[in-house]
Length: 299
Ligand code: FDA
Image (cartoon, rainbow, N blue to C red; front, side, top):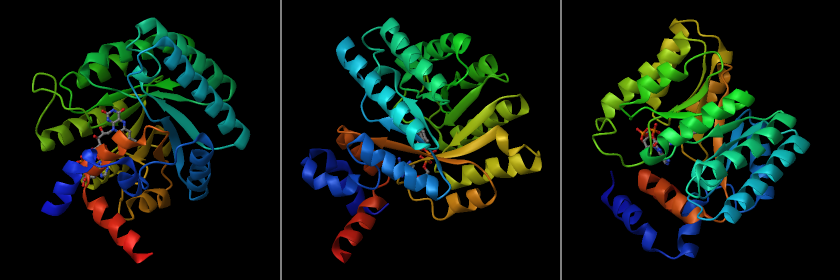
């Protein structure tokens, strides 16, 4: 990694917002719902499905959690009215899990009612390990009443094969990702190659069963390995999709997947809380900084 990029990525969180904003732009679809939905319309026009997320997490009051829930309800209405191919991704602590389990459950169920009325689907994002059990419980309780809901399982957690065994079945629609949070050895595999092995194992477990899997990764070798297995096992295209975070460069891979007739969904975050999210993205891939600088000086 270029040491200058690495250094800029590391100190970015100390910079003022106006300075970080140009670097944030590729990763965040604006600050308002209207702008985000315009981006989603344009993605749909290029053949991509989307999942939309309001940036933010860990709200501390019932009132805030309710207000975020109302914003998500508005988005569901707008998606329906505009006929967009877009579902929702929601963090449990954004709709009140830190306030209390019942608060998050009440808000999630309100969203699922509306999502059912507007023929939509809600993905429950997975946060760090203090929230894993509660997030899976929310999913399982929701599944009793609703079918338009799915969890996320992180490939780096030791527990994940057991979780997939427990959840596997025709009702399962799960996103598999590597896992973004810093977790101890006690909870998570630390070796990158072992995480990739477990990732592939989890995908196989789901597809050897009856579930649907969203393969969420920017790791091209992993995309290729899953695609190879899917092809050689004649897995039908309606059993899986690929997912990436909006703005992460994939060097033509997405268009290749679309050309094969696969569903490719982009995770589109928006909102006023873009700063922390963008700094995290830039730390993960400081190469972006060079692209943005080149573009800034070109125009
Ligand atoms: P890996 O980290 O090996 O990266 C592969 C390549 O992509 C590297 O070259 C890297 O630089 C680049 N890259 C990866 N991520 C990047 C980024 N964000 N910005 C710029 N470049 C990047 N995690 C979680 O814990 N809970 C969740 O609910 C979700 N949800 C989720 C949804 C979707 C659609 C995606 C794509 C990812 C998530 N994640 C997540 C994040 C996930 O767990 C993981 O941390 C990141 O995607 C990075 O891992 P990769 O699989 O991309 O591989």
